[in-house]
Image: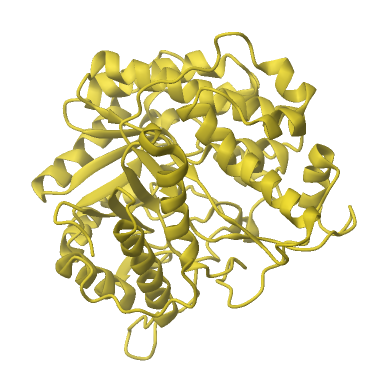
Length: 463
């Protein structure tokens, strides 16, 4: 089902696991600030300690090796390298990531480096952050310096993790740092992430010509309740344009979809300048997939807070509460969607899209230790089995997929949800920092060892 050179990995991000928020010269990030604001994060949780990975990285890499992970996708903390987001570097931050890569090399695990996973230096946010066009130059310099330092040690880079989340959860809906609710800023941030991705790719290639660079996009297919309802079909197209096609077309075609111009109107016209959009040669495409988005019937503007934000864009809001089994995040379980998405890009974009990787896929379930000290997380095993089977099915349908990174290696700080939601295949006791592999870790280890031969057919739907 999976090719012999298929890359099996695990993934984390800097702010979610590192801790050491102000050690060794690290600057303040927007998530440090966000966590200080009352009511922003569940239980008043924060990432000051998180998983203490900054001090326990060697043990965590050994844990990856014990599971058979072939690659590790991690992110670098921008304010750990450049505390104020300018050109003043902090060498102790660079040293930390060199030591991490040393451990990975020693254990034969390929490092896959993400430059930005949401922890923007606060000093840059004070100047407008991703809504300010100046962020593109700042990010280009950062990318260049990271590639200078690590380009001879890291083969695969992604500039920005999930630009939709950066723009819309951070600047549109305000549920992530920096916590702004402004459609104009969200549209500006969306455009600037496309520009910044292209600028970063070129900067990386200038100093590390053999580096493989690609975007990492969070994507979902829209599921409509009624395929004969024109309003639901329109809403599905809107959702698709906003979350998927804005970045797919922006990055791979050098243009935004017509529906995006219609939705965003003057907000987009104000920020796009001649020459902003271009087609640069990406080496791979990372896709973060968790669930399909259900499109239901029309609701009132006041039905839920996010609808009001979207309503400003398209004068239409849909009931999006999911049906069927849900994870602890309230997300539906739709494994067929991951395979359909991969096949879709293969058919619709053809040679424009390079080899794809699943850079994140996983689920939150609260299963804890039983009386024997075992985390028997059968729901997660079923989720992984079905999604991996769907990925394998997509390969059989012609999709070129180079690897899969499970999210996440271990339970960690889940952003505004704090420590309430556990995505890890390794259980973490946040009081003692003990790591205990769950039954899902053992299952995933067998997937790696057998190249997926232990997967079983259990999906309810494959289109």
